[in-house]
Image (cartoon, rainbow, N blue to C red; front, side):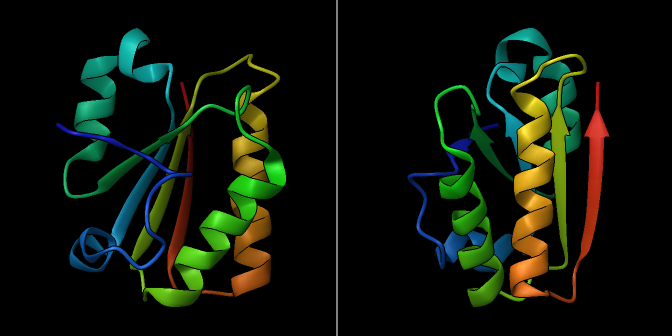
Length: 111
């Protein structure tokens, strides 16, 4: 499974348009829980981000930009429990949904 950086990915990428389902996950999970990431990425385009390295507003605007350009079917957010940084990813995606008001499903997963 190949994953891509959320913040450096084109908001209207042909890969996003082809999949129409996104898994946005904490990048540390590729090391900590690679099997889980592979399983959750099945049928989704996996986009990773580390909220210790990325600003909340950058992530929220990137997700809102994707939602405004591509009619997605689902967005799934996957993070680790107990991380004060990872919880921001869930909030950033929620904010993007408030801004873009997409017609797709949003799921939050915490491990």
